[in-house]
Image (cartoon, rainbow, N blue to C red; front, top):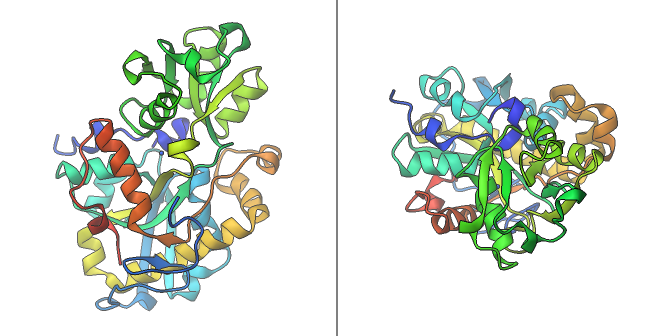
Length: 335
């Protein structure tokens, strides 16, 4: 995920060539096979001591990782006996070599689609430590200019839509939402344009519409664009977007540290979800979002429970879109 491109710039191809976007959201309860901010987990805290463990997180400076920043600010990691250092990364899949070489331990804000593909294709065994965020209706959508004549989803049939990356979460969720309005995915023409450049492309009529997330969605609307449809609605409502990812090897070698990190992070997510004003105050400190923009920007949700059901939604959509998916999504979750 590139900073210029925000959270969705995750190239599956890049992740897969290293050799050369309901259930379990915001819940504080737990169930069999789940772990929550209240501390229920089946992981065995053996091995290295969490009290003496330092963890380096390669994190994207985007809204997704607000839970991480809250956990740092509120001292949740320190209370768990961890020394967590955040290293800003420009693209989550580009950080995979650092993850495999051990210079970072966890990737924060990793797009599930890319990392599920990485696991399914044997790039490396993925372990999901915690969710980062799920979309909300006001944070992710398709925008067109009034002059385009596109006023409803059905009008997008046969049109060119800018996405940050093709064959990934944007194309999958957009196609799913439009299919509900009778638009055949095969009629859509997706072109890759970085998020910061989408507004200009739309204004210049180089594309018919753009698929944007915050803060780029708000920017496009402020520039005269009109929202055609939310991409977080219907079958994709509350869709899981990204998470905190490590390797299965690291999690097995450092189960105590992994468990302590997971619990503190989920606590950070719960706090972030319950205190949006704290998130808005933090955003300008680690992202390029201004305080003025943060004050009114719609926020995603930050789940405080890690369960298989939301992850299965991602895998199911990937399978429907013809992408490689893990045989057992639940096996990728740290418990």
